[in-house]
Image (cartoon, rainbow, N blue to C red; front, side, top):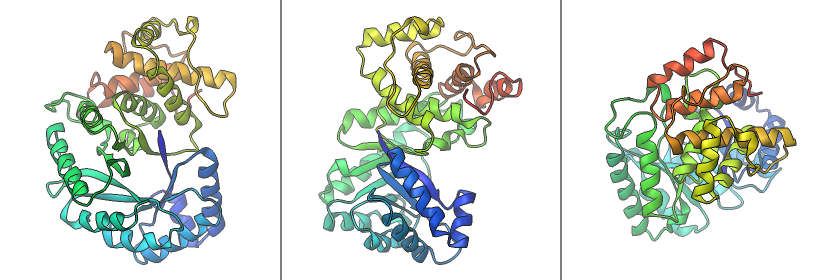
Length: 354
């Protein structure tokens, strides 16, 4: 998984405050932490009222003074992206373009043509907005790939953002199916058609407006991995997220018969009997086992298409219960996440994954 660290986005209040104070030491400290946590890119976003380019220049210089991790320049303005890239010592990532006229995808692709190391995030939207169904998003994808081909841009330099929307707002009557069916269908189709292209997502968008957001985030990351996601914008300081991703990758690498055996054990609450592949990272043995079981539970529900009731949630195991309700909502088995919210309010799981 390619990790794009999201901790230096000015939309986050603490980052906005550091930018306003011009607190360079705070910015550098966060960049160090993201680099040490294993981020492949460090995303920098400066949504200020004025002086966006100057602010990005300041942030880029600070980050580059403490780490060699490539920069992801994050701006809705193609003009800003094109100008800010000159401040980077090494090629990074443009975040982002789309088929919207105002995003001027051609200008960024021209820059990539001149500077071969640069990569780009391309969002699946156009002047109509975010397409409602998978077929329309895939048409936007087709248009993006054609544009890239016209400029001779290798598909391995493109990260397709399928545009993740809040689970609580997903339409249960969507023609692709309820839950995240439209997004996962897009991921699966793109992966089959273009195996060299990267597929990315801003993971935490899925849990916007919900309590105990990590359960939903972890569940979505694992489900997206199942279908072919290989890049993500996320918090690299969330060791649990990285552990669930690592454990999911290892589980998905197992033979199908073994995966089904583990899935049935997860459904029947027999994971203690199974020898699960453990995630990488600085984890205690107990933590590694916990996150391996959570990843197995998420993938079990996908493989067996089981609902929350079948998984027998237990208020004495809040982590497993939160994951069960989160996954059920994403699989479309809980319209508008109402069961998830009710279980949280009833105290079946909390904000802390313990």
